Amino acid sequence: RLGSKARDAGYRLAGFDTIGSTNSEALAAAAAGDPGGIWFAALQQTAGRGRRGREWHSPSGNLAASLMVIPDASPEQIATLGFVAGVALNSGLSSILPGGMVRIGIDGADGADGRSRIALKWPNDVLADGAKLAGILLEAAKTPDGRQAVIVGIGVNVVAAPEGVPYPATSLKALGIERSAEDVFEALSDAWVGAFGLWNDGKGVSAILERWRHSAAGIGAPVAISQDGIVRRGIFETIDSSGRLIIRDDDGARHPITAGDVHFGAT
Ligand code: BTN
Image (cartoon, rainbow, N blue to C red; front, top):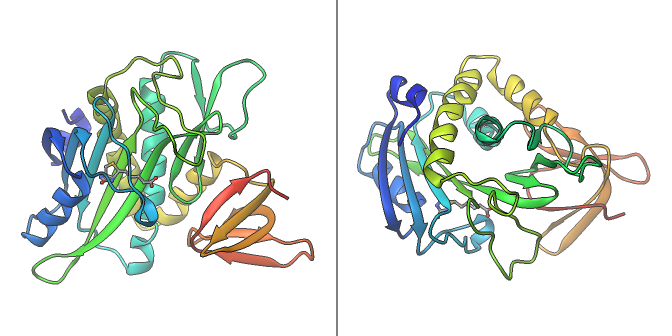
C-alpha cells in the first residue's frame, strides 16, 4: 500500500505478489503513455535486474519497487534523480526503525555502541554496517509524445540478503528489524514525496546533494574505484554539484568520477 502522503500527492500503485521485474513493468507503462507518478511494487521478482547488467536477487518477502516519473527538468537535473532515491530510502527506512536501533546519517563504520549504521554508498547503494541493504537502478524511457520518463527501481533486502554475491550484503531481518516489505514500501513511498518535492523546487539539486553527502559512507577516507578494468585510488573528497564523486590522488590532483564500483578502505 501507498503511504498517505503519496496517495494525497496523487501517486498510484500497481502491486504484485510475483513479477518478472518491476522496472520492466514501469518501462512498459512509460511506453504505453501512462502520465507518470505510478509505482510498481512486488514481493518477489523472477527476473530482477541490478546495475551494470547484473542480476538482482529478489526472493519472496523482499521489496522490489519501481517508480515511473516524467520530470519537468533539464537532462542534467534528471541525472541526479538517483540521489533523490537515496535520500528517500534513508529517511523512509529511518522512519520505520524501532527507536534507536539503527541510526541514520552516520558513516558506514560499525559503531562502538553496537547499533547499526545506515549510510549511502555512491552512486546508488544503501549500506548498513558496511553491508549492502538496498540498491537503486535508474532506467530511462521515452513517452509516446517524446518526453523523458525515468524509472527509479529500488530493491530492499527485507527478509533475505543475496548469497554468493561478491560484496557483503545484509537484510533488515538480519539487523534484527522485523518489518514487512509492505511497511517498508509505505514508508518509502511517503519519503519519496518529501525528497522529490525538495528536488523539484528550483534549489532542489543542491539541497538533495547536501542531504545525500550528510549520510554518505566513506567521505574523507581512501577509496578505489573500478570501471571497465581501470582502477583509480585516492581519497574520496566529496560529491560535486552534479553528483560526481571527487577523488584526490597522491599528487593532490582531483578527478571527477561519473561511474564505477567503489571499494572503501583500499589505498
Ligand atoms: C543494484 O544495486 O544493482 C540495483 C538493484 C535494483 C533492484 C531493483 S528491485 C526493483 C527494480 N526492478 C528491477 O528489476 N530492479 C530494480
